[in-house]
Amino acid sequence: MINKNIAFGLLSIVLLGSIFQLNAQETKHVVLISIDGFRSDFYKDPEWATANLKYLAKNGTTAADVRTIFPSVTYPSHTTLVTGTLPESHGIYYNTGVGKDGKPEGCVYDFNQVKAKTIWQYAKEKGMSTASVSWPVTVNNPYIDYNIPEIWSFDNPSDRREATREFATPKGLFEEVTEYATGQMEKDAYNLTSFRMDENLGRIASHIIEKYKPNLLTVHFPNTDGAQHKMGREGDYVNRAIANADNAVGAIYDALERAGILEETAIIITGDHGFVTVHTAIAPNIWLKDAGLYEKAFFFSTGGSTFLHLKDKNDTKTLDKVKQLLAQLPFVYQQTFKVIDEKTIRTYKADPNTRLALSAADGYAFSNDAQGEVLQHKVGGKHGYFPDNHNIYTGFVAYGAGFAKGREIPLLHLEDIMLVIAQLLKIEVKEIDGIAQPGIFEK
Image 1 (cartoon, rainbow, N blue to C red):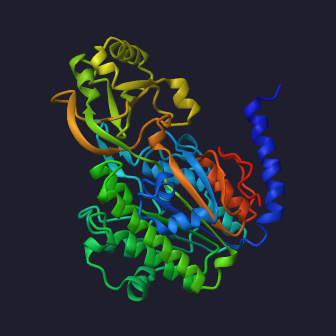
Image 2: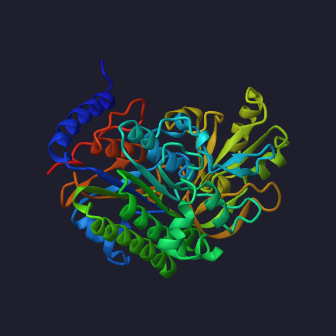
Image 3: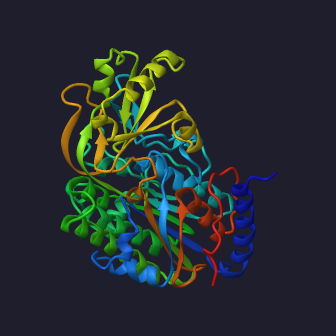
């Protein structure tokens, strides 16, 4: 007997395929915009200063929510967006590598680390032109014609200019956009310390649209993430950040209009994760250290969750001892997290090297600390949680060629969005985890 979920997915694909043939014939260009830390309330609630997003939402198709991946962090999520696959399949498990001591080790940035086929490659194989601005894990990507990758100096991380100039393709593209789009930038105009980063990325994307008119453009705006890490979900600073990203979206819209391709372009705005406001950090490695297990295992934090790494992957005795340790913790600790077992990790196709993880309760997050107090006061915002917390969901606004006006989809999954793009561009994709959701292209 066919599993009901599989049957529904197959039916959805058939329905969406037929609907697409009717409604998306004129889609020649797709612009995928990711606003880091994007939430559906940013375009639903009047408190947020997002005139452009609300205009596109009102006149396009939206999702009430988008379920993200596990862990819900930036680089794995962005790789899911362009592959339609989950971390186990695409190979990007965290934002960084995992050091032998359990500390983050080097940021993930090189496209060669991505194991799954991306939408850029599919597009190139169909003879289409591609572009990308500040998209994670795109350094050395051979399938992007005009690429301003997300990269920075390893010696001076606050300065992104020289590294971007070095890895931009074709050679000279960064010099071109600084001459014609942004002007010469000081380092703080092109890093996460200033809202000018999103402004300048919007200008760069606009220049590429007007000059090169790519069939597929992907753009990543990071500043709303930084604002929420600093303040949590609410407040004037977050409102300023999303308003700034909204202005950059408006600049892209205007560029499409000036380029004469607005009517044949689909604009998709989504994100990588939402945010949880936190008050307390948990240091589970202290539990391991006090139990004499830290030499054999450690927890690696992604903010809202933490993954157990065994130094010997076959050390089931230590794994069992950690499980027992967690089960015997006082209630004051147990109420701060939930255990994610191996079956669930495999179901969500998270890091295949792990067999146990913890996801923090609302208001809590994890650290990698192995000394000090287990619970520490920590104010701000975090993501990385297991995706059963509604606050960690992201959003979806789709406007233009192929999309209906005023339609809302109840729920999408992050891995579905690449398939939406493929349908718009009439690209057949294979071996993905996303499924077609009925109703997206209906008139």
